[in-house]
Amino acid sequence: MKRIIAMLIMMAVSGVLFAAETVNGAGASFPAPLYMRWAYDYQKLNGTKINYQSVGSGAGIAQIKAGTVDFGASDAPLSKDELDKDGLTQFPMIVGGVVPVVNIKGINNGSMKLTGSLLAEIFMGKITAWNDPKIAAENPGLSLPSTKIIVVHRADGSGTTWIFTHYLSAISPVWKSSVGASKDVKWPAGVGGKGNEGVAANVRQMNGSIGYVEYAYAKTNKMNSVQIKNRDGVYVAPSLNTFQSAAANADWKNAPAFAMILVNQPGKDSWPITGASYIIIHKDQKDAAKISTMLTFFNWCFNNGAASATALDYVPLTKNVTDLVNTSWKANVKVNGNQIWK
Image (cartoon, rainbow, N blue to C red; front, side, top):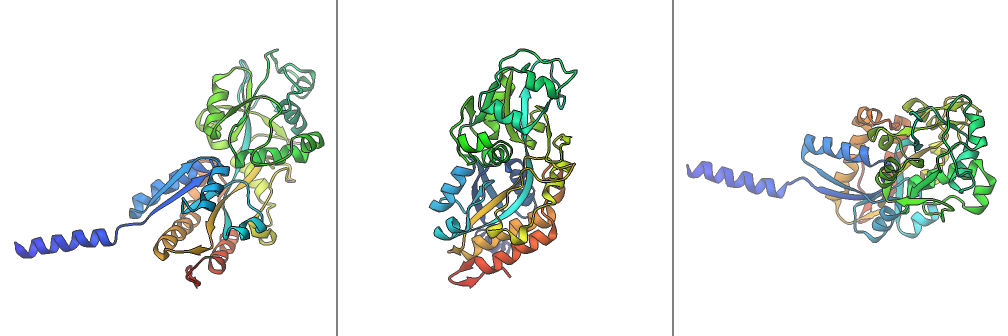
């Protein structure tokens, strides 16, 4: 009996000493559905807990700079100069699509067509009713109501906004000069919602509204998306295939610090509002066990998370890209000056 008790005590002590690490991250709501799914699956596999808070890209960047989380997440990549200034490195994790969503009585999912120029005029408050002649011209045969347009945008610093406003800036010179492209712009019209979650909730509640969310939020909330005319002049609907078509043009090898703009890519099947989401970490790490756990998780996502990604309509990174990321970890991430990733 004493021997059994001693063994149980040793097992209990061992469990404490070798307890799985907990990793904390925060940032973009764009990839949050997938990060939370990956974290759930990974914890079931080996007990490692990955806490991820969907607080927006701006807050995620602020928190990793302040060192209050182990990793930040952003859909707006930082420049190499900004990364170097704060001792940070970044790498892409996933690619997905931002979609305009509408709540207009009588208009079904995918039945409305909008050009990028029309989107810019709507979000600038220049087109104010759904039966505007410019909208009607792109939608012959569609019965458009005279309902007032209610614009819904992000109220927080957002990588989803960064992607969306980069697209509008690429399409509309007026938008580019008067509003611009950033995580947080001065919106000419509309009401704000916090996170993709807040925008989705506001659009669902208000007839006549239009907003923009990551595709997983549109699907989960059964929201009505629109078709958009792409760079090749073809109207396309948001889907995994159209996101993949846009992502196929990415030249990650020659992108400084992996910073990539994927909006308005060529290809008749390309969704024009596509973007990557990034993980941001400190180059100089203090806890070898923590950073090893974190990078092992991200590598597991690359190698084992593709099915979950595609199920949620995200585009997994190809092996040639994840190999580049692994090489960047070897070169940039150190503990006491020593390489941590082998």
